[in-house]
Length: 222
Length: 270
Image (cartoon, rainbow over all chains, first blue to last red; front, side, top):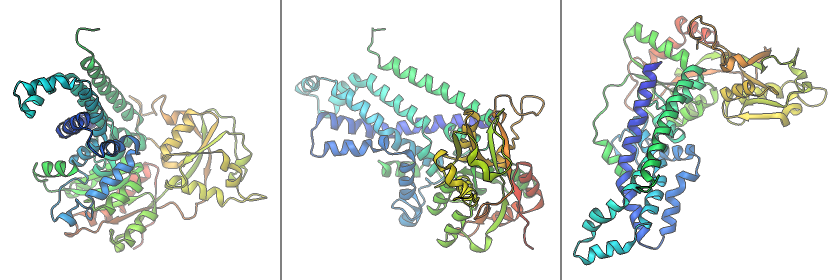
């Protein structure tokens, strides 16, 4: 049993870490553009991005299964190659990325909106181009908020079950995460194993949320 | 974003050769793990197991997931997938059945001699798996609908007290938690191999410790409870060992393991 717990924990952490890294750059780009530019359709983009917060995870899982299914738009029959998302840990990464993206974008967007655009204007006046301005002024100012956004996305990914189990399945040692392990143990009536997994999940959650609180707290205050 | 993820991760390397991949209803997991180990011990063919609700597994098979064998807790999903050409019709095997059991909170004062008087009991909730989507709930409803009363059926009398649960284990957990609830679950749900620390007795405080059997239901619902297995049709031909594994599931060794976990193996044809 303990080997299974370790494998599920390791997979959950791996999937959550990779998901956070995968969605980081696009989430920061989206959040920055949405914070700084009132382009047409901005609210629509925001609404579509937020859908995973509103829809049941199973619905997201069904959509992913349709998209990556053999006959779907990114499926092996359509593309002629197998992207390898069905029943793999990459499928879990895809599901967790979609589910975590809105939380990361929203948190990052609020962070960017809290930075006075005049700092960026000043940097530009001093002769810095837009990219160096973003990299050397905006990003460092946003670092704390972006870290909190990443941790929020990470915790969402660790807890994700409904969408993940649809596309990645629930194969012990391959795609069984903490969340799907809890489901499987409970379904099979292995109460003791389910309890152990729940305690591990609580520990991961408490550490991550605590880290997020500490990092998002303004420096110098208690 | 999806496309970026897809392209990025596709380059991450290829999979090693796969063992036989079995999709099995979540309730079968313990038994299937034992059977898989026995099969691998006999043949050296590796077996991997993917477990979820049969409806989720069916959707995965439909989407072209690389499954080799599908064992569903319900004939309906198997027959739908045979009709859509995703499963090999000739490989269909009815492997197991199960009993339905009426349970109550441990120490209950309720007593019941016959299912037909269920509606007279003063319980507050009848906890069953969702009868619209989950096989266990559908079987329970069908059974009550086919138990006649002077006017109408037992289902008519209890329908307003039904508390649908997302799956049969959740229905069991509800009865364990709520003294005013009774529930209908599978006989196999009451069999545990999750032994306590030392002496093999059920762990104190476990769900099974909180419930007791009110009535063993002898009659079969209609359609009857059937766990059905079939081979998944693979574009590049069957994985070696898949057909043999399905055969093994119907054999004496597997039947003994299923029976130990509370399932009832069905007689197999010649």
